[in-house]
Length: 229
Image 1 (tube, rainbow, N blue to C red):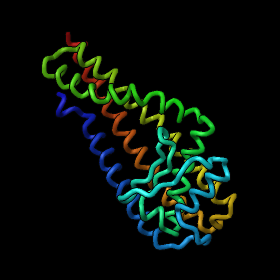
Image 2 (image 1 turned 30 degrees about the horizontal axis):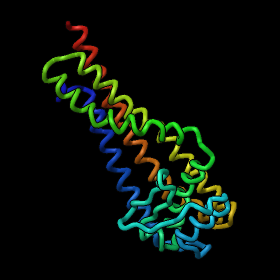
Image 3 (image 1 turned 90 degrees about the vertical axis):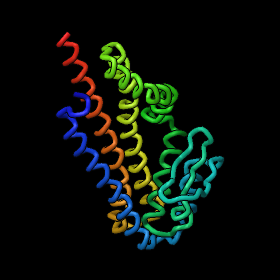
């Protein structure tokens, strides 16, 4: 029942969406990496400018190896940009850089969803590691108590992903406003920014959809087994 549940068809579709989203991210980034930004600034320069405009002079911008490895580290309070973004002077580069700075500004302003996400992280870090084992052992031994506990633990990871959505969408919204307000992009360049950041946001939506469907599958199996006893 665990291996061939009807929900698996929806989960497979969701995985297909996630794969398509990843391809869109790569495709859009490649396309708009070939389009120079009118400002002529690099991703690192844009990140530094927006940080300074928001009084975040103490938040450094660092370059890290890899491609699309960009992120904001809330513990070290550092914006880390991949080499194509850090050195790049394209629409794609400055869009990604501005997005990561958006997270730094969220942190500064104690954006509600981000604060909640940070507080949940230690719990989710533990529960997400334990949940698969509880579910596996519970299903193998037909122990509803272990399955139920595994579902509860897994639900924390799902909630974490759901909360991540407004964090990511808000960071992208801030990025667009920052770049327009500072004259870093012209209105006709906004399409490229939307393409780059929109594709990235879709990957989070797809990942969340997969997790929600998996959780629903476990709940349905648990309910069915509970009714049969």
